[in-house]
Image 1: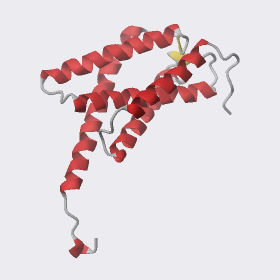
Image 2: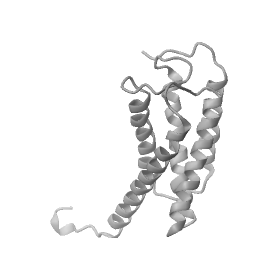
Image 3: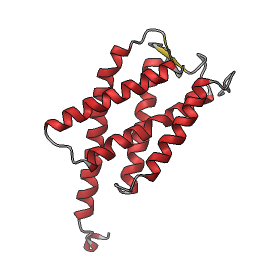
Image 4: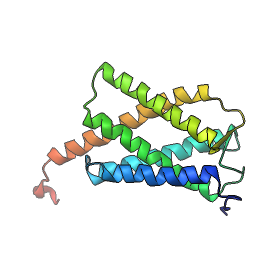
Length: 174
């Protein structure tokens, strides 16, 4: 059973305000993708974060705790909702700015630095409590994560475009 935080303090306020700000930002951006791609990217971002957090913060490695206590609490669950807007913004601006060539490398590196800054801020505001984790581990994780986000996005976008161009053949029962 999920427990409530013992005190509603800095980390809970940071999470709450961040969710309101990032989802508002995401919702006011002009629509860029079909709903299916948007939902799949949001779901993928959240699921990917859950898997990584479970591996790194779970019982096997136990490198950090999320929020105030070692037990799984409501704000641990709510924290996972911070990841989707970041992943969405990453692919949104990639697509909007038509990043190509060596620009893709610098785009990913820039966003990895942005993620690192957000992590440092989250750490300072006690969203994360490190037990064996170091900031130097995060940057390569972000590079890999952003590459994976981009590959998933490009696959989804390419598949959507391919399916959109494929005519429905009514002769085969469809």
